[in-house]
Amino acid sequence: MSYDRYTSPLSERYASKEMQYIFSPDKKFKTWRRLWIALAEAENELGLKNEHGEPAVTKEQIDELKANADNINYDVAKQREKEVRHDVMSHVYAYGVQCPKAAGIIHLGATSCYVGDNTDVIVMTEGLKLVRKKLINVIDELSKFADKYKSQPTLAFTHFQPAQPTTVGKRATLWLQEFVMDLEDVEYVLSTMKLLGSKGTTGTQASFMELFDGDEEKVKKLDDIIAKKMGFEKCFPVSGQTYSRKLDTRVLNVLAGVAASAHKFSNDIRLLQHLKEIEEPFEKNQIGSSAMAYKRNPMRSERIASLSRYVMSDVTNTMFTSACQWFERTLDDSANKRISVPEGFLATDGILDLVLNVVDGLVVYDKVIEKRLMSELPFMATENIMMDSVKAGGNRQELHEEIRKLSMKAGENVKKYGKDNNLLELIADDDKFPVGIEELNATMDPAKYVGRSASQVTEFLENIVNPILDANKDILGVKAEINV
Picture 1 (tube, one colour):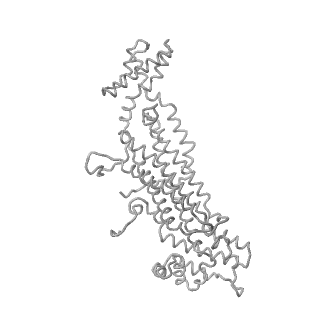
Picture 2 (cartoon, rainbow, N blue to C red):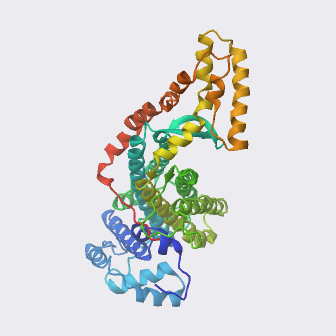
Picture 3 (cartoon, rainbow, N blue to C red):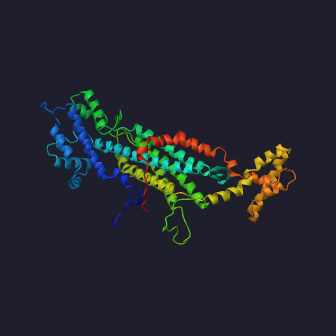
């Protein structure tokens, strides 16, 4: 590591080695060479001839290209770029130095975007596949948590004010459902990914029409062959010099959606940790605060929120780039794309690793959960108490008003005087209610107030989540390692 220049925290602290490699120079330039090989093979297979009627691209040349596909002479390319100020032509030259027989046919008919844009689509596709893999593992871990705690009653909140109880597992399905929606979006975008293909300088394929003597069928087949060789079903049917930058907005929007789900999850964990009900994992020697030694700050969840805000804002870069393209191409996309797209993926990768790490080690304090719930449960039980009293002969309207008054009084005891909630005692002492304290205490079973929470968890897991996990058994079991 160099200490005298800026290095991205996304590489040094947050993103996995796997995602870093996908967006590495080595991956990019090796993909360029694969694309040049695919182009040469396609031209050979389509019978491209030179001016003498001989094959313009020979098997011998292709074999030479393949033999040097991975041993990139970076020093030669770097030196050449200093001279010509063009990265693609520098690598064409460097490849040609290693492949003297094929030097003349490398990049034949193509423009820089043939390697640049097709590579961008390829690495974004691989990045999305890694995001998908980690999303499915997050879903797997969250489903285990939801199932384990599906029947654990807990106080629910609306407006962060006590509301009708739910269960710990049911709340987890709310996080889980959003990640499932993200997975659907990832899979949709993956299903629509297309290569640019070999479209030429303005997307008209004019250079290839010249090479193939105006044979449109062969020029059309060129795109199809290249797509198949690079693992894609098809290429964009039309383009300018570049693929539509709308694709980048579509991809980054998916990443922003993952980030939004992760942010909501992390906020809930931070609030629950404040309530001392659920905590993220905290290692034996971890320091929570430099000043307050007793603290256990939710640092991982805070980091999820922090990185998520970056990804959610990063999508605007791609929108501006897409909106600001002029006609068939303009180069004000390049510098922005080099930063916004890779860093959006690296940050999302770091977010998913953190979510996976947090979910895998969540600590539930059931006694704290029960204590808080029981302190509020008398308020939740008032409707049942009122209905039971009406059945015993009481007047519904009169009882409603009396319970309202007694609830205000009990609330005042709690908030103004710091006393325990004595609503049940107040009701038992009120002659308008034909119920005693024993009967009222019998209503204080939290399970009576959580509705179908446990059943909803079971049904959601069985009908929605488990089919996803069953179809992806081969990629389950990912364990996230976080650097700091």
